[in-house]
Image (cartoon, rainbow, N blue to C red; front, side):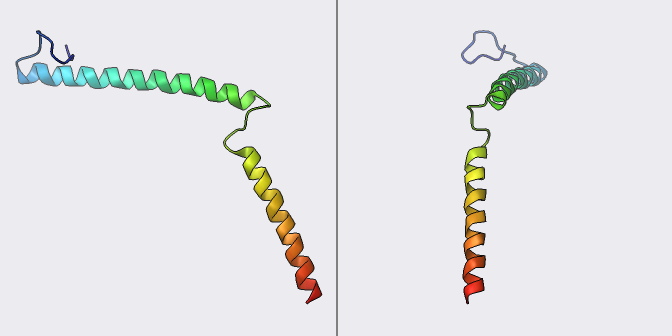
Length: 80
């Protein structure tokens, strides 16, 4: 009923509102199914040891660099 260029379409305001609501429900169901599928794949990645989870490796590298910089700053401040 909500397809474009259909020979059958609602002619009354109530019918059009009903079709609009049905279209919203269809979009919501498709969005829910897509989110469920995406969650499945993300959880598969999270369980894998080889996958980088949300930049965790990059964050670890940044933390290591920050620690090294702090150590270097402490050494320089003790010399002066």
